Length: 430
Image (cartoon, rainbow, N blue to C red; front, side):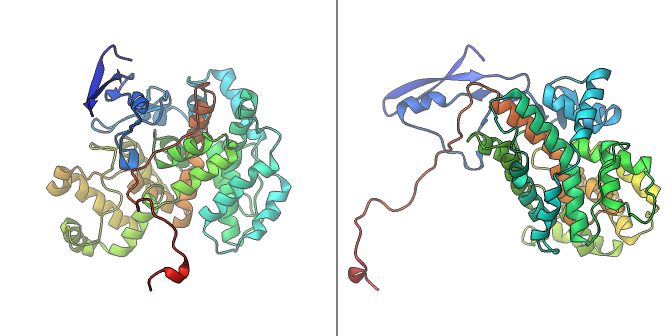
């Protein structure tokens, strides 16, 4: 909070608006006092509005900075693992050895799902999109785990967090296997979080599954890099739903629904679709010409970022992970991956890309990496939702534990008809 104010004067009235300053970031003007005058602001898309105060994640798009609880994302991705990140986002500090041991044990004990959920899946068509199934199943968890839904109870909130973080990989893998007609696989306590997910996705009852440390590390990194990203559309959806007092499973289901939109969580899937559309390295010049043409509907997916006006800090980490996976699975000569690597080279060297700051972003590399891991494109956003769950539940918990929180109620600029009297149907003109 600053001791300075901004003053607005209109209609012969003046009001002082407090100026706020956080740890980092832009200076904000508190417009709450406008309500005393019966006035409010107009901001489509909330692009100039801070809807909450948070201590969880900070982004500086101009400098290419992403901090989880103050820690740079590159340091966390290099030295930490996903469950440690979960602890950090939920609790505000990195755990010591005893704390992470207890946290990991609690997550592990919650990885199985209620037996009736297996039958619940049979209500969906086999060809249903995995995200459609994900929205339904996660929203239904409150029907199976209604013993800890008092959002005013810190212990209940903690239990809900454990359950969501633990069960999301199990449910995500079930979505994949149901779609493909494969038997469900139970989680195994001997594996790490990322290993267990890959095991539930790809193991077969007819043979022993062996973990690949390179692939498990890549999966863990994807989880870390997508764990949170400040007040994006899905996180804001979770907060708005949570502001009504809705249970955490319903709130996370709402977040999954928001993430499903192609402008949000579908970007890495769009990257693979674009690569298939281009088809061959020889056609890259043709599509680059189309990308430069403002009148052409074609867009290069996975390049540039709405928030980051510099290089996406997550992309630097994901780039190396992507190359590690491609080398491990031996697909460097696959036409699709050769095409992707040539696009990467051009984006990092071509003056047009450099001038426009159209650097490859995290979606470009994560889409290629997930594909190389054998994960189909319709599962990409499911995995995004799995990883982002801890961010959503951290923001939800931060909000509902604040004694001053209240229901969200955005205003509108009404431009419809003025007041008019009802006319009976017999008197209405044809």
